[in-house]
Length: 262
Ligand SMILES: Nc1ncnc2c1ncn2[C@@H]1O[C@H](COP(=O)(O)OP(=O)(O)OP(=O)(O)O)[C@@H](O)[C@H]1O
Image (cartoon, rainbow, N blue to C red):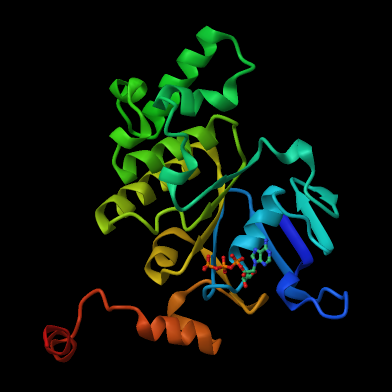
């Protein structure tokens, strides 16, 4: 069963700099984008910079409104994001440093979405969430700046989990992390996917991450879905092929090793 579906989503933005004779032209950013995510599935979204990936993420979490099209979450169809979906669709951004309030302790960062609960419940929940994302409770009194990038991203994931989501939108969520930490976050995300039945929309530029995380992926190019595939090794669209060609091999051939060494 699909946890989320988008049908023919269109989105344009006004171009104030190109205003002419009192008319404000609009630029089409998303052109009839359709996709679906099954329950418990990790679907990736790749595409060049400016192709509209983050705009699509914003439509899905209700930060922006589509010009046209339909959304469906857990079988409920609507022309725009519904406030009742807010708890269950959560967004994790690329840069946790910018997303976490530097004045709040780690406890406060994770507890903030739980503020309506009883204090004792909040304490227990925050500790359980911290443990679930593999962080020590010793960090509860620290501030975001005391933590590494990987730890900060774990806090962001714990914060998102506090709302009991069904769908996480991971917008370049591991891009700023080094390879080792990235791998650890992948392991964490896979475990959460299994244990909680979570679904992910995993937005990235990195085909290796797609290979590791996703069972299926879409390619967004100039606001259009130009490809849907299950393997990065059978890409069809020229952009996807170019991205594949640009990917460094896991085990470079001798010829390539010599080339990189120069
Ligand atoms: N609020 C806005 N007003 C006007 N134009 C916008 C707005 N937000 C995004 N855009 C434009 O929409 C286009 C798509 O932007 P978007 O951030 O969705 O791309 P992206 O694929 O996520 O890029 P990247 O991979 O670099 O993050 C860009 O040309 C951008 O300038």
